[in-house]
Each structure stands twice: as C-alpha cells, then as structure tokens.
Length: 295
Image 1 (tube, rainbow, N blue to C red):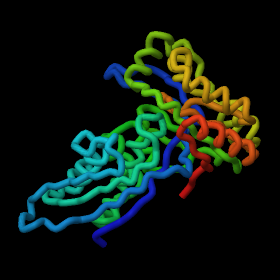
Image 2 (image 1 turned 45 degrees about the vertical axis):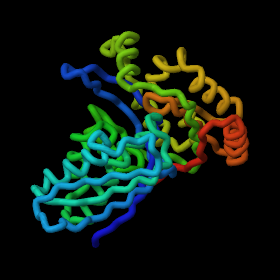
Image 3 (image 1 turned 60 degrees about the vertical axis):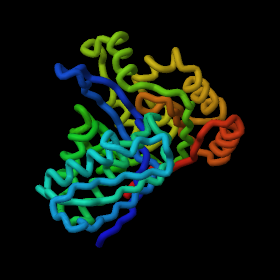
C-alpha cells in the first residue's frame, strides 16, 4: 500500500471544566468529548526517495489557503513524531487535507487531522502500533490529539492523556455553527485564570456522566457545561447570539465548544434543527447538522 484516504471527525465538548493550573503553565482539564459527523478528509501517499534513502520530506497541501502547510502544521509534527518513534531516518510522504472543519473554532480541526496522520502512517508503513501507543504519540503533539485518535465519546482528564469510556449519546441531531470570530485559546485560558480560583471550585462532571447513563437526551442536553463561556460570551456577541438562536429555535441545550467561537445545539427534532440551520445559513453563518460519530 502506498496511498490511503481517511476521514478525520470534528470534536465537541459536552462538558468542559478546569481542575487546576499546572506548574508548567498548562491546565489540567476535565471533559466529556464527542466526535461528530463533520469531517476533514486526508490523503496520505508514500513517495519515492528519488535516489536518496536518507531523504526526509513531508509535503503538506490543503484545499484552503487559510491553513499553513509548513512545519507549524500539526500534521507535519505528527508525521515527524511517527517517523522518530519508529526510527525511520529516510522518508518521503505527501499529506493532502480536504478541509471542511472550520479552523480555530474549538472543534479540534487541527488535532483530528494530526490524529488521522498518525493512524494513516501506521497503516501505510505497517507499523502495528496499537491505539494506546498512538495516543501517547498524540500527547506530544497537542492536548486533543489523543482523543481524536481514539474517537467516539470519552471522559478526558489531565492535559488530554487520561481516558475513561462513557455511555454513548442517545440518537439526536447536533447543529454546529461558527460565529466567525477569532478566539485565541491562550487568551481564553488567561482570562479564566483571572476569573477563577480553580482549587475552590467543585467539579461536577460526575453528575453529567450520570445523565449520560440515564439515556434521556433532554436531561443530558440540560446538563451541558463549558467553563470557557464565562470568559468568552460576555465579550463575544456572535457566540452568545448563536446560543440564543439555537435555544429559541428548539434546541434542548446549546453551548460553546472548546474555547470557541463555535456553538452547538442538541435537537431531538430534525425539523427544528433544519429550520435553525436554514436561518443561520441565510444570515451568512457557517453551520452544519451532524450526529454523534462512532467507529
């Protein structure tokens, strides 16, 4: 096999809280992450060495000019980590990204692409690395990458390296919309550091997992939580208005994903979801109707 094409699903946070700030400046999180049926599509191809067995080449291309295709791209870093782990000193690979997930929107678009590179190279090079090993490689790339390797629904802690299986969401429609505002994740974390003393907060993720286990989509939707809303919504009108539009349009619950600016709403009625989707699209908002995604 010299070529492979893979789907890379977007991620939403059904629950997101911060446990503490670490001495290294990173934050320990508690989150329930869920992949959804909004995909980037990646094509990976092994290229000839062109006579130099020690040649090192990672060529990235993308359908949008908004995404950097240089060494700063997480896909580039994922490929580097993979080849380093296997001790492969000479390689040449082309990675093409057919981009559909909004960029820098709290949907793990870059992380899921990096995870797809790890999964794809593992198959292309017949490396035989298991999911746990690929997740460990993912930790070296970004906090969301390990979950994007695993996919489905999980409770995630630490800086993304600790997983626990969760009860699957009941059948529902998930409307995702991006406000078009840029939210800097480092800025959002800094803002939360100013607002909260994490040690004095009582995390209640256990209550949300109980709602999942109960299987009632209305109760689950009413329990959605994202600590980043406290930092973002008061000063970003676009995300706040999206949330209000979804709730007014019949969403059982609506919340920001990650550090934003994307917002998603959960619906048990496809007609309600489609009606709000059409309204948002008419207003020029990028929006998608999805479902929970499991492999």
